[in-house]
Amino acid sequence: MSTDVSIQIQLKHAQADAYLRWLTSQYEQLMAACWYDDRYRYTPQGLRGPKILADHPHIAGLNRTMRELVKARQGAKA
Image (cartoon, rainbow, N blue to C red; front, side):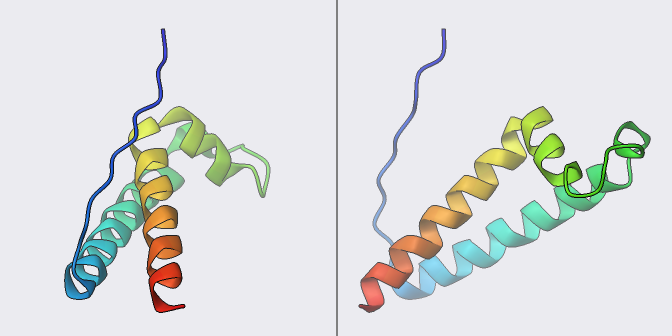
């Protein structure tokens, strides 16, 4: 059985910036490690990223967290 998890945190701007940099670094390292894996060698162009995200929920979670953090930061600036 699958249930959605929702969290809410409050960060100072400096914390949010540092957290986003860290998330991005983790995401890039994990995607690079998977990108050149033989498992995805013959995945058609344009489908490799989505396939990796579908196969690795922890990377998809980083991606989602990064997108939401960017969205929240943009809303805070407005």
